[in-house]
Image (cartoon, rainbow, N blue to C red; front, side, top):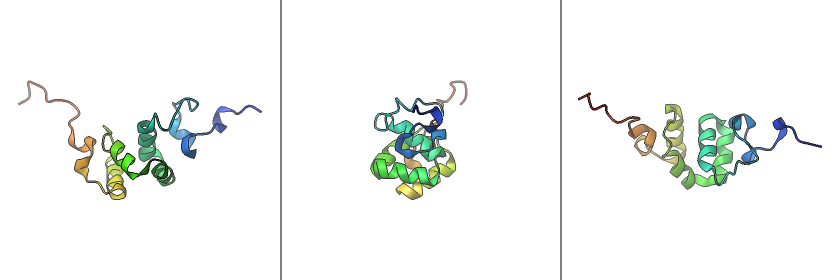
Length: 105
């Protein structure tokens, strides 16, 4: 019996909808940890969060989420509480998206 696209296994048992644009056959949870973690913290819900936290651990999560370029404010607040971080620890809260224009003073 051949598995169809909708029943193929997902990494860590996460919802298939999180990886709608990804070929799950080539997705490696170790090699693509940044992508997996980013998808789950933004869109995965609390159950997905618990699965990712169990798999990667708090140290790895701290390292990855603080380096992400974009996170919604509610996600940053959640991560601050869950991982004992401050808003200043996040790249998305401290870096400017573009350098200042030379003609603006």
